[in-house]
Image 1 (tube, one colour):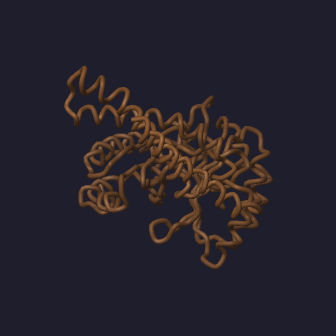
Image 2: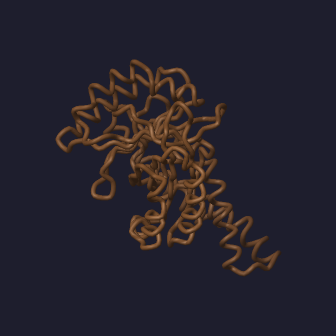
Image 3: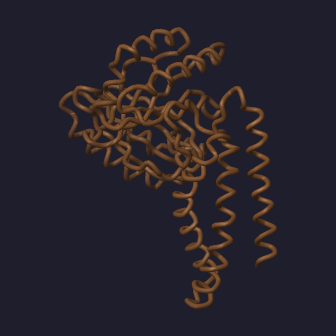
Amino acid sequence: MSQQSNGAAAAADGRITIITQTRVRSEDGNAFAEWQDGTSRAIAAFPGFLNQTVMPPSPPAQVDWVILQRFADIGSATGWLQSAERQTRLAGAKPMLIGQDDVHLVRDDAPRAQPAPVSVVISTRVKPGCEADYRAWETKIAAAQTRAPGFQGYRFEPPIAGVQDNWLSVLRFDSEDNLNKWLASPERAQLLEEAKPFTEEYHARVARTGFEQWFETAAGKSTAPPAWKQNMIVLLLLYPVVFLFGAFVQTPYLSKWMGLPFAAALFVGNVASIVILNYLVPWTSARFSWWLAPAPAQQTKLNIAGTALVSALYLAMVIAFWRLF
């Protein structure tokens, strides 16, 4: 992956995530996966490294590899980007890549950020001396995109002096369809036309995400757990949380004592469930790490054992709640 880094800002004393998006030749997919495993082992021993998440392509929705590498601070992240070890690794990957990859640095302000199905990372190079004009324009387009159907969130990162030159914005939407509608909208096209006098280069790349933000990847692990395992863990916790909250809080207090209508009580219950899951899912995933990310040599056996265990827990909870309530 190339050495070019595109826009972001980071607090000197805060955690930093390096977001890399790269496109690999179809015939080199397996070779690149092996290369990435080697890179994961190399970065695991680097000072300041915290953890890493690797999202392989999922055509046709996502054609890029998306790699998130978290560091304790900007110095550690920059040290890795400029290290001789990384440069040596990059030389081995270059023949497998299509075009130039994107490397962004962003502040890790929200380690438990709400998941979104799809995001787009937009990198812009601004003409020297036009920074004030670009900031004013960015405020304008930020207001416009919040009105787009399916919009879920936005963050804007200016350049880091001496590290990277481009400005970075990340948009989150609830679906690929709504994201594409905004990207192709006449309103956005008009705004991009207005930005031409003070921008030199602009490009965007889509990255799909699911429950990954709830499943922290331990240092040295190269990939996030498969989506079906993540979903099973979430269901394992969501069912008892919703059931017990309903039985002990929603029905006796919100509905009967406070007299809230069902719709309002249900909304409060959903909010409470999400807040509780933000704590329970990471804790539980750590206890199920042997199943979520098994060693390759034991993958089949542990996949079967873990799936059977979680399924048995489902059944046990249903029977217990059925008999007790």
